[in-house]
Image (cartoon, rainbow, N blue to C red; front, side, top):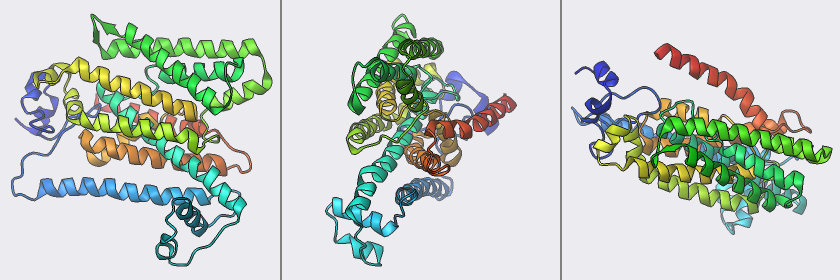
Length: 397
């Protein structure tokens, strides 16, 4: 069978060559990110070179991400240098012996005020942008595979809408105060919305992608209506302004305290998804093909969806509603390294973090001293890219 024929053969015809140990043999499957792996080596060189190339992309992206964090912290109203950032970072981490050797120009001790700006404002915001972007990109990659829908993203199931409703109740109705109260409200709203989606999205105890998508759209619309109702009912201009800025997505309130929980949940969710990477590769060929390979389709889908809901709720709680990151980044990653989730997930994490870091940097510096909500900038960039992806899908069809 030719490669072209192999790509268009579905179901069990394709599953015969699917996932022999860790991936898929053959040339690949177009669409929602169906994973493949190279055919067995003929001359012993090309598969290892491809793996080396993909690993090099991941490693290079990680180095670029670390450099981007340092540069992003420097940019802004305060005239901060890279040496000052490095000095503060090494001081706070008890790594002062790295200051001269790593920088090569000697340590430059900033004033206490500048050190506080770097450590208490710039660095947590930059790291928070990386964590949120990484988490949204990973959840987007998982959602697109589980639903077999290339247009899926973390907000497909109404989770972000539920989180927004919970946060609005805290901010506007006065059920709590401060970042902790807003985060708790957003997390509770996200979990409640996800439970409702699970209740209405299953048939005879089995989750089905189409029913989940439809249930998610309905729950999202309901939460959006409730959010609007709460805002109009309270009619507090000051609270309404705060809510609108938060609903548009903002990292301005980032602090180390809010970052710890999000970072821990991200690491745990990423490890769980990587553990199921081979199962995700099989999902690209459909539930029947995955089941024929011995995968408990319903259990894996439940486990990964719960992990995605938990991660999304935590991210929305600390950053507000930021769209298009989870939609666009997985497509870019699959273009670079192919559809194998053992590479897609870590690279989505790295590139998603770098993408949102730079978008947030533009949002806070482009119209200085005014600051745009980061969700506005992602929408401006994401809508044209979404239309391009949609047209590309239509041409393939």
